[in-house]
Length: 222
Image (cartoon, rainbow, N blue to C red; front, side, top):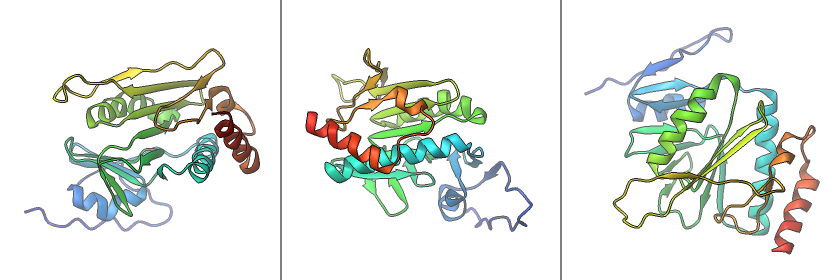
């Protein structure tokens, strides 16, 4: 039986270890709130957040919260809220996750047990491999409905959606979804919402009032 791990006691100038061997239970108890993810039996420290990353995260929260207020569909959470993928033995902390009311997983006050309907990662320089490759594979195999990769450094946005499976025993498979000629992306998970990709690269990004008005107009046009 594994002995409980006591989290490191560190001074303000010290840094937490980049990787810590632990059980899933120890990860949730000690490291999830410290911006660690869990994979391969280790709690893995996430990279420091870039200012633009924070700005984009806040904008997307405003966008989804406005939509959810006008057209309630479920829960919107952001890191360090955990998404557990029990079949893979992994716990990830998407920058943003959308969890629809119809989601068959188990939503708790601290974690989503099972795949979210939409996971969004905002790319940072230190996280290229993790966001473009490792998480793409985990979210695909774990059954996440959609995975959005938003790379403000390269002004690149990629959208992946689970393909329909003729046989429910077939493994999950992501397919790439393009934006339209105007740079808009629409998801069937959020009817009426239009994500205008070029707006993501604006500086400054739309504020609270502008975002709410944008979403209101989208839904009226639906």
